[in-house]
Amino acid sequence: MNIYFKRVTSVLLSGALGLVAQAQTVQKKDKKLNIVFIMTDDHTTQALSAYDSRLIETPHLDRLAKEGIKFNNCFVTNAVCGPSRATILTGKYNHINGLTDNHKVFDSTQVIYPQLLKKAGYQTAMIGKWHLGSTPMGFDHYSILPNQGEYYQPTFIENGKKIQEKGYVTDVVTDKAIGYLESRDKEKPFLLIYQQKAPHRNWLPAQRHLGMFDDKTFVEPSNLLDDYSNRGKAAKEQLMNISKDMWDAWDLKLASSRDLDSLSKVPKSNFVDGKEDDFTHANDKTLDHQRFFQVFDRMTPEEKAAWTKVYDKRVEEYKRLNLKGDELTRWKYQQYMKDYLACVVAVDENVGRLMDYLEKEGELDNTIIVYTSDQGFFLGEHGFFDKRMMYEECLRTPLLIRYPNGIKKGLVSDALAMNVDFAPTLLDYAGVKIPKDMQGKSLKPVIDNDGKVLAKWRDAVYYHYYEYPSWHMVKRHYGIRTNRYKLIHFYNDIDEWELYDLEKDPKEMNNVYNNTAYANVVKMMHAKMKKLQKQYKDTNPTEE
Ligand code: SGN
Ligand code: CA
Image 1 (cartoon, helix red, strand yellow):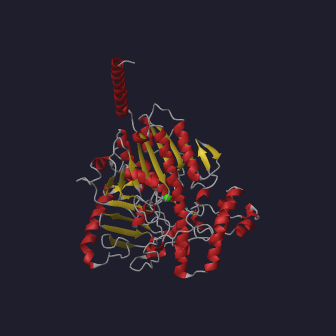
Image 2 (cartoon, helix red, strand yellow):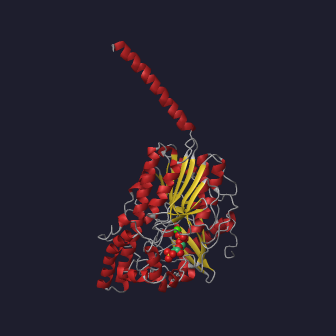
Image 3 (cartoon, protein in one colour):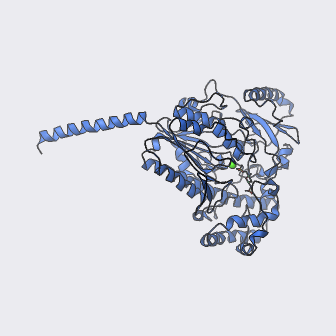
């Protein structure tokens, strides 16, 4: 080839490549963004290293934060599963969408944001935990876990049909999510709602993670042994205390292979139906071994063998140490962390797997990925497990959003965000009109302002919890939280107020409601709360 010809070819080639590149940019700009909404169940910020790395590393979730935005102050309107899901889907509080507690069924005649996206040309899918009692609507495809779902060999309801799957739930939900994306129409944008059961109670790790933390001692929260002095009845009378309310077999996995073997010989018809939704069983520890056996029995013989090999050691240690009082509580906390955190590891790995798939498809950067949980969770703070209380650990939920085509890398926001904002935010990003009756606000303007609080942004969040009497017996309450203070009213069978100064008392150990030094703050917080109750139309909060 002579030099001239070479030069001409290279000029032609670079011109052609330039055109291709240009076409790609144009296509990129015109292409509608995809949405992947990832929600776990009970995954709290204390167990997500982008927020707090004292307990565990979650590299795939951290990547979302590093390459997107992290909200430090995202709060839920009601820290329990169904209500949180209903709020997210409708963009409305529970007294408006009707799903005030887990025992109710979601009214499917309401508008939810996936329907609006579907109308706007999105293909929509819902995979994993649904927990609203209703049949999902507004989706081209759904595959949901009935009720809470099962960790091993989970059953799904897939487009109306019951399907029994093999494997570990966190992996299977991801297989289904990727399977759906494989079968999608590549010409259309998609909304994938991908919702894990993990790390919900009773925290069964995957086979590959059994015993992974056996040699580790986790840092304890400073108030693990809280005695609830300077707090009211609600904190004192709950049933979610690690020392007294965790079940030996169900929660702490203290059923030996011998116990389990003898249970396998009991006819199933002799088992009491300890249905999870029936809270009369909530503290009936006589069902403990039986309930654990039911989930254990879903494992294959090989899985059972690997399980008992690991947990027999724990049973043996428990007997050998024969701990009592505070030492026993501290030991229980360690076992709780081993299992809960191992469930989180599987979640993190699977988020990585889903991201790898999107990357391979060339869709990763054109997809807005949201990561959140239905609420936070207590990991031993105040001696608690579970959630429900308006205290920080479960009021706060993780919120990470990655979307390189539209969101700058590495942003961190302290703005007060809420789960009621998710629907308007996603509609806003998709360019779909936000219905006027949605009560949340799009977070896009905050994100576009590099996460910095806008002049007109909210200065308080409103909360309302209704599920009492029920599991864990947390009293009904409502309240508000500003950047500095939190006001709570516990009602129904009590009438107690709490005020916390989060700057001086971030762990909420000292209720200052009746402290005269805070009289003006109390007044200011009451006035703020009244205003929010009016705004959100919850003016008679003690009457459901
Ligand atoms: C189950 C759990 C409770 C938990 C609720 C609600 N008990 O009933 O500990 O508070 O779910 O959780 S269990 O013994 O069945 O595990 S939620 O996330 O669905 O709101
Ligand atoms: Ca939950």
